[in-house]
Length: 525
Image (cartoon, rainbow, N blue to C red; front, side, top):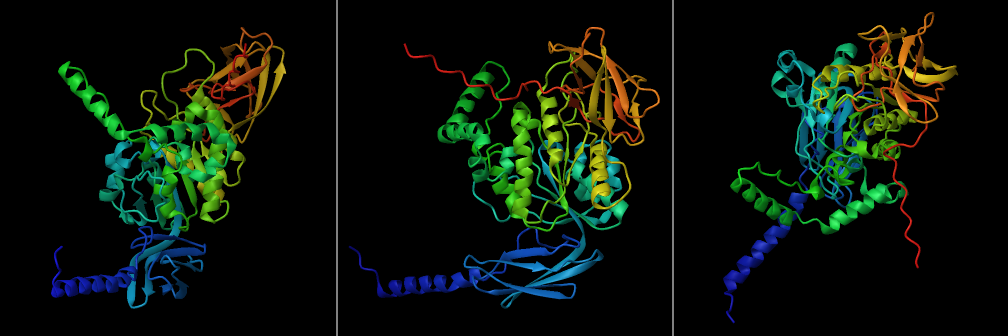
């Protein structure tokens, strides 16, 4: 056994002591989350949480616009204070945050309206990828619009921060930002004349269950099947083995002159696993003062549209509870038209998903932008994001800011069977119903008690602005009517304000996305 020289032992002890003495200094470093920084927009007229990290037990003060509040870091070093509500300010403010001998001065802070822009790829789709991106960027000189994007981190471990920063909206910055988010925010800014802050956390392909805290789903029997399937995946998936198999298949394809298979992605760190996006993307921003959220998602859940009836409202209520700001506004985009036109009427999982979205309007402070008229059958990512942003902005302007603009799509109200015809009555028709492009409305289907669907003829009822009569020579005794009920509907009925009628069905017949009843086990012999 070797003997350690005395000097070496002394040096090692000294270094260790130095490391220990340095540890409190490291913990004492005043740290702020990315969401709190230079160029940020603070939500007006709202008590505002501001938080960060410092030495456990240390007093922290936050000063801005003539007010100063103090708080104390907890045993893990996290502190939080709440500022009194601020009025709109388009003149840059400074915020001074002090912890012990350390101070941070945040500059160029505005006070206005803050919105979260969330969902999957159609919300993530950037200005660069939308129509007229070159022209849009040329005019995107908006010093009072501020943008921040949350990186895509899929994890079961709760994240408290992310890498990012607030940016002033410029032609150089806006191209990579959410197109729907930007066009929505720009309309608000130009109409209201106040600063706008936009938080983009969208992730392409994400499933709604990924945006919900894992334990919330596990405790709800309605999602037992989904969670059970994921537990099997979590117990059996081996990404190294999947990569090895892919490499072997790629080499074989290359040798045979065939295209290589797509490289596998790891579902455990992806955007579908329940709780992953709540933990990795949403959680670091929860609590930041906002006016509300806009949402564009549902494509990934279309195959489980019946379940989305429960999942989507649960997610919204879950976010509201976590944020602690009451029932803040939550407005979403209904699925666009996509895939091939339907040669004959029938069932559709995309139509059922749209219906699930419409049913969620039962929640308070909710709203829906209907857009089956602006999609692209060949591409799940329609490039007309300007129309989408404006329709969302209409809802916010009317509902939250008292601006007198039409914002609701006409909705089915009731039906009356008159012989072989059905009289449909609509509500929220604005200036009246109108058939775009053709004089008689298209998009209706009709069925009798046999549930066999046929395309229907339709006409706007003279003398009214809110009724449509539909019929088919193939259906002598109508029982039900559907409208725009397909993946890619050709449907022309809208209001004079160019807001499409909400897709609907008058029947309550079984959904094709409803869970199939379990097959009973054969009786023992």
